[in-house]
Length: 334
Image (cartoon, rainbow, N blue to C red):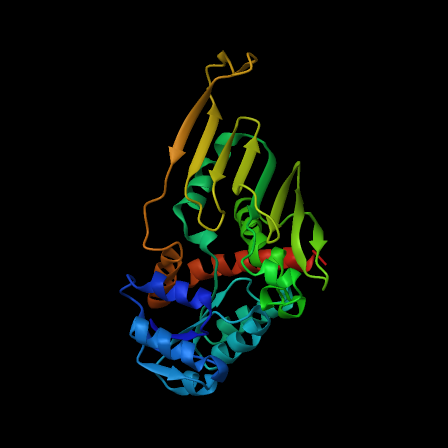
């Protein structure tokens, strides 16, 4: 993969660090908007990127890149991704993918027409924990509840309260807690259970209408997935799936998924006393810790490089369907 980097923000720095051990990625160039040229030059120097562009079309037309990674503000994702795809260049697009389902569908259709790939860079789908969850799901019996919480007091929130609105708190930039942070929780629900029957979002809104936090309820046949995301407050982060025969839980941020505990009912039917003296079903506990990686984003870049190099359209279509499912949920939250 000959990769061009689009953007100079914090997420781009994280992505460049994450890519370092991926041998199948050749960093060719970085695009910086004129006002961010100094940042672009600094990143190029730090990560050994040969060329810096301030004209996006020049980068795409250079002939040096076959793929671009786009880490710009959410509101321009569609525009920049579409331009690359129309030139036959693959796209890795930071989450949240685009503004609405129609835009997502259009980009995926263009990719198919051009024999290209477009990916949503979402770490949830590239971690051994989600694979283990899918494997363990049948052991839990009939599913009765999913709850997930990703809450983290934003480093930009104090500025926001003072009236200084960063793009991360600007609804015109397609930002807010739902898209920026709760989207990880949605991906867990979609990957495990598919599209919900009903969707309702209950936001806490700031002075400019942006959702600084909120709870999303996804209704499935026989159970609900309750997903909370907050940028205005802190809380322990977790993902829990409960069934009639057990449960599984991630303790930690959903975008990292550092572990998974799987608790299932012992088939012996034996009862034991819990800490409060109540008689409960005996359980079997399995602890799973994924293998260590260079960075939480490294695995996704390994997967993207392999799919592109091997032209694995079948695997790509699976990711594309997941992205469309999540965009469908986001559309239904308004």
